[in-house]
Length: 341
Image (cartoon, rainbow, N blue to C red; front, side):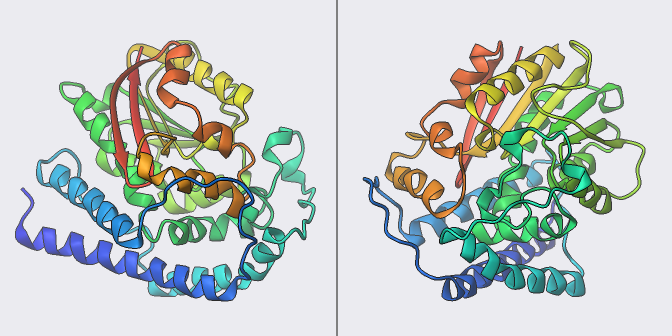
């Protein structure tokens, strides 16, 4: 049972990480050159106070779920001060290159051996990040970049996937279950899943060997988590072979046809009583007074497929692939959608 001390420890850790990444955000804004104002209509946007209040509410919902015993308190994934500082230095050193791309100075991705055979949509500088998804350098700074963007709330948004999973897990023996994280990246969601249900067998699938290497470093040695190279639109699993399929912040990075193929593949590999949980950006209408953020995001960050994603519906796309919606939650700037077959 969670105690008052547990609550204080949780609150202190989350407050510290938000302050750390919010500080990076503020410092980074001073270093970046102003972008041209958009030459297209922009919808309403929230105030900083509104965003902060909404983010705090997500942490409070997570704490209430922890208190209810649905899943354990998350352990810090970046606790070592030296490692935090090293990645902070890497982040700020890379900012000038990111800023140059923001202002039109494009560069080619390194051809690298790991890039051979990758789909064309994948070989881009998403978010103007250096090397796209294709280098050890990119893998080392990616999590810092994302947390700075969301001022320390990226992990808690990912972890909202644990709530529908915990509800679905009731009465099930985790040692008899197999789960898949599609587009697992550096493995942060996999760590939280494995910590919550250490008896379940998980597979993390991603197209980037450097990001998979970073995931292995983060997860550590365990036979219960396997990492493999592969594409979301062509899953290397048999029909109806998986109990749980999750993805976080993947769909908005995919072109329309690939995204629909990925969802169809998800439905194909899922068992009839299985669960799919998708964490991704909010879409237009999920929080109408924030719709302007969806207009601005692809303008300020290189997101080639985001505008089409933002104007669509995860639920409608999943239903078209043969999945049935069972739960949905807006969690700050993300939406958590749960489906079954």
